[in-house]
Image (cartoon, rainbow, N blue to C red; front, side, top):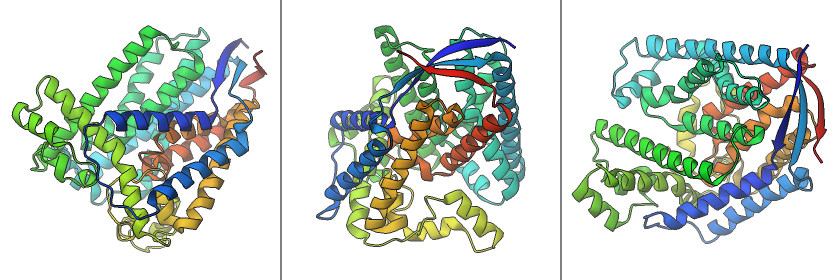
Amino acid sequence: MTASVLKLTVFCPHKIFLMGGGLYFFIWLLAPIDYSYEGGDFSVLVLFAYIFIFCFGLFLSCGRMRGKVLHVHFNVSLLRRLTWLVFFLGMSGLVLRVFERIFIRAGGNISSDFMANREMIASGGMGSVALVGALLSSMFLFLPFLIVFMRSAGIRRVSHFPMLILSAVFAVFDVVLQGSRSGMVIFMAVCLLSVLMTGYIKISLRNVFLGVVAAIALVWFAGMVFWVRTVQMGVDPIASMELSGYARFAPASEGVVNYLTNNGSAGISGIIYAFTHFSQYVTHGVYEFFYLCGLTDSATTYGLQSFYIPSKIVMSLAEAGKIEDILTAGVVRPGVYTTLFGPVLYDFGPLGAGFACLLFAIVIGMVARNVMNQKLYWLPIYLTFCAFIPFFAVVNLFSTGLGQYAMIAALLLGVIIRLCFSKLFLKCDPCG
């Protein structure tokens, strides 16, 4: 048996939560958008009340504990086996997902048209194959953490690079197939958290600069994907910045629209378009929440969003109809972001949402506390939670299909580590 040691930083979730809020506020300040408020008299107060309740829940369960730095002594052989197991599970799921979506749903007729692909993929399919494929492929979210964990401890293998490339295929699969970017966002959030926790990338002026450049490139890429998608829908990409659903409460400013109309998407204009579109996507959810809060005084989706995947399985087995039809009928404006709290408000009503926020925040804090107390089989679900909460002012990733598959996969991986790799972590000591 070969043992090695790594210094692992465990962050407090309430600090990640507040940093996400700070980044949102910074983008909101810079955004070239003329916001429209159509909420009720108390909508703003309700939002801040939910934020306070959520922060209080995080602080109540782990806030008195500072983030910890742990010296993790681990069995190199067992970690290598776990890494290969996660890789093969993720690869099996990805193959199933590709087969089910491309060859069963779309009949192999995939094209470069995002909207045509979406329509084909939305029809038919094999529920059990799709479920297993989505669950197993979500294991790829945790493969980068295992690899950077090893490499940060000085254990470097050539096989790590093809593994990372294939895990990235999982992240961009929906981008290439149907122009959906949520999977890539979740994957990148987990990767960023992984490299910071393991110290694989140090925080320095050079790395911050490179990170900013990479962020600008990704925003530009996402904007160009949306540009192509809107053109394929027969919609003018610039007009969509004022007319699309996400733009109702966050339309681009008149000056930006005029500039883009005259200059198109080439060069600097493309970056301006991408940033404006990105800002609209990131910031419109708060104004959508204000609007729905002014119109919602009781539960309308009754937990179906918060427990989407379990509810979908039960309804499918009971042949009780499509859950998507119920959700669409139960929300004020389908297809838009409504922050972390919108789906909870729909599910449990104004008062119930407050209790749900408190309970969920306590659960997240308890998971973080367990990791800080050296129970490292909680790491996968900790990574998932901490990757989701920075987006609280944008979207509820916990209620999305991919987000729930990720949480189920994280719990499954934690059980595997607990039962089959119990001797993986030999000793775990707090630093200092």
